[in-house]
Image (tube, rainbow, N blue to C red; front, side, top):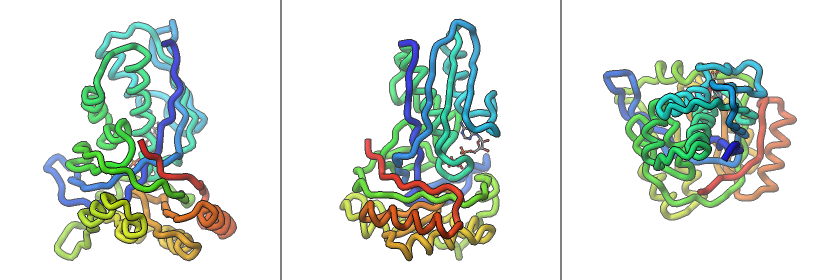
Length: 288
Ligand code: ATP
């Protein structure tokens, strides 16, 4: 195989709780992860010239070791002494610094692609071990679907698929640093935690309405205090028929679940007209 084309899927968090902090600064989480049908296109090809050459349609993104996808190729090429080169072209569609694991999913696609193209024979478990060295979300991006992520995000438990409902994604014209959000999260007795166990029960029962009503993200308060537009977008989408709307990850992207595609489209059109969000997509849940 000399080349491969892959879809690097974005994720949303149906639930996100932080339960503590490790001495090394990593936060302990309980997150319900879900892939959606919004993706970057990652194309890879072998080249005679040694080295990694990465291009992307987003000019402001790094194309060297600062790009997580570049690092993903590098760790496998070094470990397996691959002397040929690789060309990686990433057509980004997932908003950047948006709480949708854009960089992590590109890295996961490259790990998967290099393993396939060069016939390295790494099992999903072996690939996940290498993925974790790149970032806490990368193993999940390899797994995809609905999953509970614990530990620092690397302990993954596959969950039953949720109903394949329409989803509206809305990102306001601001970018949020994940590190800043975690630094500003206060965990004390007054902190209200989302009920992840309840959400798990709803998912196992495949009850979309109840599941939507029990979604929660502990990071939302931190980001919303700085960027109230997130609340405005949530309220707008709920007012236009969403079952519920919530911030994904550390934000600022908001996602909303809908019962019907037509309602989702109408809500997205109304949001476009409001000018509250810069990037708006109508998509669906992606199940494996
Ligand atoms: P998460 O949800 O995992 O916190 P995110 O969606 O908030 O991630 P990313 O889109 O991954 O954030 O971008 C975070 C930073 O990573 C950006 O500032 C960007 O410069 C850098 N980055 C490195 N590689 C990539 C890539 N392939 N795609 C997007 N961003 C990348």
